[in-house]
Length: 465
Ligand code: NAP
Image (cartoon, rainbow, N blue to C red; front, top):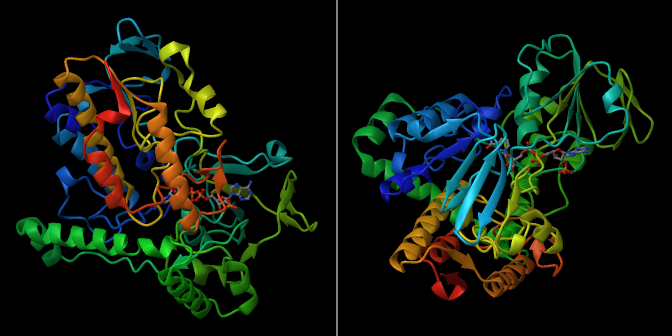
């Protein structure tokens, strides 16, 4: 967003509560943290890195890439680090936003873009007794690198993307590892491999090869989108293929039965890993599918009364991803409060995930209903930056000072999204006042549809004044 704003000739300021750039890739430093999107697609189009070390890059390499990109494009001097935004207040008369931070600073801006992400608040489950646990508790995004796992009995709660990367890293160190699974997830081999010298050489000195490769990954992933339709042949084929793959990798039929989900693939992101399933079959690793009833001073106790003594609990329990703009009090036109408005609509909603009625000149990146289950979210983010710039240009061209989406446009979009959701594997996930939103906030169509919709501003959907 910053680079795009600069390139379009706008002055901008970035407020960042941390001391460095990197977002989720700065926060998540757990062992084994590797991206699940192929690196050549998980890069910004204007800074497509030719020398990724492997097909799926690891956290340190991605963080270094983000930091280098920010430096190379001159973004760093425009960032105020250590500034946590607490209040955004719209001045209707002046058509300006006032941005208050925890340090007591007040900034003014005509346009505000929220890029706070969805994975910034660790979800620590409220399990009875957790506060009295005598051992160590850590969340995957708050890793304690000083903790020595050697010889310890460790519990990992959760079996999502973070967990399947953490578990193989801990298995060799811990004396015993217990993995608590609530909902099984589809798992497919990752087949990560390093790029050799010549591959990196070709990507660097023959850029069209790099672009062709990137395009091919994008196309292959987009081609897989029909498998998300609940009545599609592709979904049936994918379910059969994944079931066969998981059964082949897990010899123990009882374990395989615990691991193979009943929901269709894509309902939750499919997990990519080569070492998780073999690890679960070791004698010193247990997969527990009983619920957790409480935590004692030195043990986790399951619903069926089993007491599992542990020294350390790793919470791989994800993030409070439904709380958009957490901790920021947003007051728009007519003193409308954003979070109260989202309470009334039964969950966060925004037109194309980017704009909301009553909040002129405010834009969201990675907003409601823009997550993906089949390809890289970077593509969506770049569509959003383009849309924001188009909106600002539209205001300028009309000699206006504000742009605000109409409620009717947002409602029409959500009823169309509701129709698409009904066709997909997320059909049962409706929430919200009208039952037309999905709890897991995915964009239910192809990314090319999103690209098309965000290419230009449909002025009929906006009040520009
Ligand atoms: P996640 O996908 O939300 O998984 C959280 C896990 O914790 C789930 O298995 C969940 O079970 C379980 N859980 C939550 N509360 C629980 C409770 N009270 N008791 C028992 N289990 C509980 O979180 P994540 O793995 O940290 O991933 C978060 C996001 O980051 C995802 O979108 C993921 O794709 C992304 N991510 C990407 C990468 C990568 O690219 N390498 C790596 C990590 C994460 P239920 O399923 O039953 O809720």
